[in-house]
Image (cartoon, rainbow, N blue to C red; front, side, top):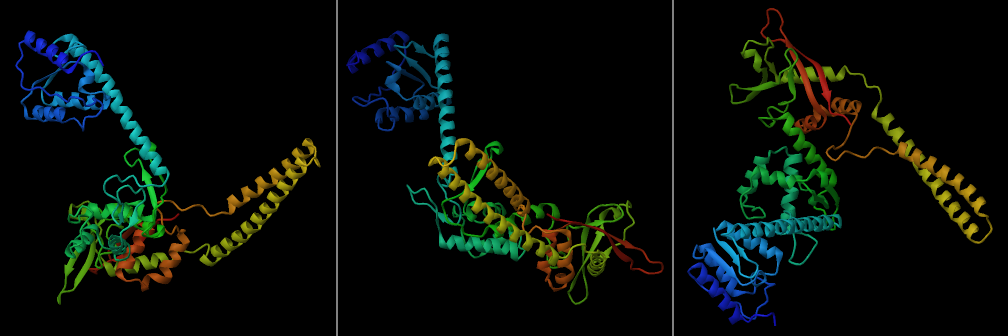
Length: 471
């Protein structure tokens, strides 16, 4: 039907091979099978295996579409030929990679092949982006830890056993102050596998803590900041948004506050203390006392190099100095006053929203009157202009009174006064882990000096500044 029978094509190819004095390794013939599909062609797949094995170094076809009619398949074939050092020739299109014109033609094909590759990639990216915007997971092969996704399904479903492990991971990190490595060791000790059935490591624990799928959201473009977005997913959440945000804050604060060591019950101030003389960070100095107890001291490292005269400070002196500093800070506005203002604002917002509902009803009534010819167009426009102005004023006031939305990485935003109030009333009742958590959330830096006292080995500790982490 297309001009040459299989036998005719074979004769032409054999004549060409004879003129070129080439040796024939094999003939690959998919008789009666369309060139549009590579997977259902046993002969061509056998040829590809022979090329990979090094048996074939040159491929000759009667016409390019005898090899494939798919540009995408052609891209892959050309790449495979190049990888394994195999030449390619087409009799009717005069493609012979041993000649300059043949190599030029192949380069032209390569240009279109590259164009097709980029088009495929762009279509895939657009498809995944649309999928994410619609709330479906973009995890093609392995769903997020804590979820399952059956083949053909678009929505993840909760895996109860893994979901319980997810909740434990967040509890260990946020509430028990455990390190990423500590959590990994605990899970491995209990023989709890990861999604890939391998051991837990700190990056895999961190991956769970940072996965927004766990709060019911979907994200796209993590590696492409200009295309990144987050949206509400169609799957169920495993943990609360508040717990997730608190974990993000602690992950971020741990990078800054504990560059080399994580705080424990013996040194919860680590990473927050700075020398009031030279400004350098204070390091821990653990001292073992008689009876086996451990005493945590802090010292300025530059003192050993002779660059600072600051004395070593014990944890007890630090506690006393911090308490004195906090207690001497006057609070301009109490939490009670702040709450009262919030209640008044909420009441005013409710009042304004009721007024908006009345305006919406009036707007509809005026429109109905105009449609029924009870108003002229000019009259309707005049009334609507007044209604729109009042609506705009009300909406502006509501926006002014509405509390600002919480930052993605900030939990329990507090003012300096609120932090001081909590410190004064609750700090002494905190255990060591709770003290560490409080510092991570609300304190950025504590500058302290241990003033020498004449004829005494111990000095007088004084906090000269505390930098609060406020909203």
